[in-house]
Image (cartoon, rainbow, N blue to C red):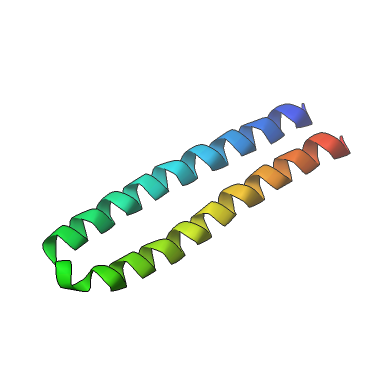
Length: 71
C-alpha cells in the first residue's frame, strides 16, 4: 500500500511541476515579446523560478523513493 502511495506522490509531483514550469516558460516568453528591453531581467527571474520548481519535483521523487525503500 505504501509503495502505491509513494508512486502516486512521485507521479503527481512530476506532473504538477512540469505543468507549472511549462506555464511559467510560456508567460516569460510572452513577457519578453511584449517588452524586449527587459528580457535579461525576465530571463533571470524565470531561471530562478524554474530551479526552485525543479527542486520541488526532486524532493517529491526522493520522498517517494524513501517510502518505497523503508516499507
